[in-house]
Image (cartoon, rainbow, N blue to C red; front, top):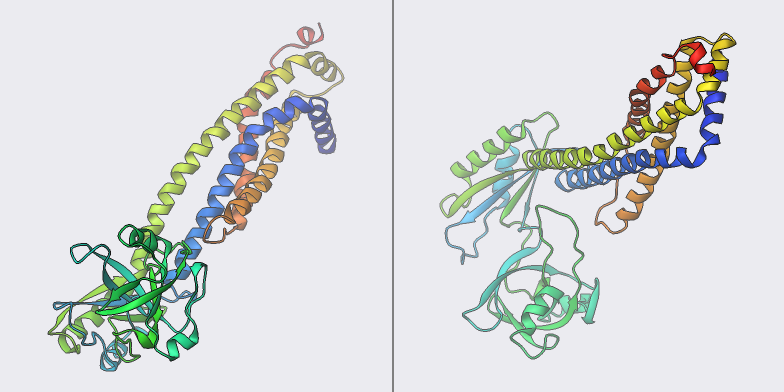
Length: 396
């Protein structure tokens, strides 16, 4: 039997039993859609995390050296330009830059209901701020130029503050020994970033008591060359700072290897994805059993047709191939539909996530090949059973 005739006959057989074919296909669609959606969201998260740790997705290795001061009340700089030059002298370091913790952020303690209840909050100094304001107003450039001691706080901070104060907007909060008037409340963005925190308090940079000069800070961000061994290079920088660093006698230096952190998180994410994918695979296994059951029913219903074809000269191999093709076509179509449904669901879910989903070409081929393999594996038994009976029994 010609290949074109096999395809035409298999397609016509599936169309004659549309409802049964669609119901058998449904399990494949659900399983493939779940796998595609999970892979797309997982790839999006992985890409977002990679961009966070490699400075916008440049692909360069990065790392950070932190300084832990023995005297936390000291206002002396942890890093200076001399430390930058010291770090750049280490082979494998392409760039070095001083930053305060998370940019212009500081860790401050605020008395929420009295001196006995001081809580730590992340504060950031800005030249202006007017994002997601829900009450009051934001900070303007004029506030910064005129050194107004104003502050905008997050909804979380405002909720805690309201437990101990009559009002939020209009009240004053003490930060680093100076009072700042709360002029607005903002809603946090809630983005995904495992290594930085969004500030809960924003104040004008020029008005803040503790300045953040460009030549000093408490973190040293390093960009490494592409061929560098990040662990070894970062340890060499830390070793050099411990010997010659400007603050070597006032505390200790700690290394954060972003490549190592990315690999660790990626390993965890891969494990979670594999586990969820295995659960989705159960749906595919059940769908395969459904396809097998449908093919057995189809074989039983078409015994007279099989007998006539055998009598007219059709070989057992042709009969087997026809039923194999029917099962494979059914699952392959289901896989393609599942891929489209999974992609659509991933796009919809992506609108509610703080990072975009990412589609890989391998997901399409995975969906197609897995669904086709299921059709082949679960149709072999029914297809072979169609040729085991003798011709006389088939023609009864």
